[in-house]
Image (cartoon, rainbow, N blue to C red; front, top):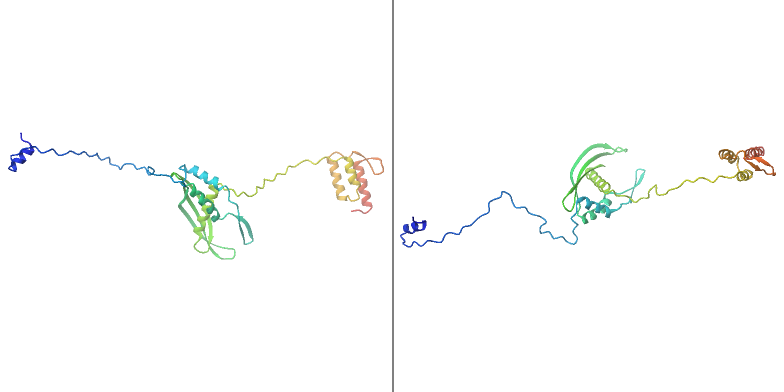
Length: 262
């Protein structure tokens, strides 16, 4: 049996039937049906100012640790109302650099708004906007937290929606950050109530004898000595005789009434 090369040489009129070298065989990988997986962090080299690759809840905790507090340093004084508050610009200016440092991004992913026309007490027409904003807080590793806040604003032109969203953002940062004001706690000053020392019968006698003790004070003393059980206590009166404190008080009071004292 002749080979393919011999038959080809005969057809060409050649007698040389030297066998040609066989063609080199190549093998190809079977197709897998999907592209090979690519690790986006495979060639990543962190820089000195890059955030730590930690979960989003830990990154947000670090943000809170750095922010600490935002005081109510702005004053509203208008329409007969005065109060201190924390404006959205102050809150964003505080949180912005800190979230950047820790690799935290805050995105509004959905805004649901409702509107209605209203008027002020002076009859000016206003547009009221209420929004419910869904937020996505993304950490340095790409994992997320989902939150919702609401905001409300009035405006006479076209800024109501923007104002309402700004309020919602302030609520998100202050509430999600549990951001205190460091204002003085009304319970920081504690007053412990103590019992007044019990007065003696002779002490009451001396007060009763003072010319400056008014009739109103004598009536109060009458109540006090009954409460503490000194009404029938014996005291030495102004002439050196023993007399019950209650009777002594009554007599001195009557004498002052007779004398026209107040």
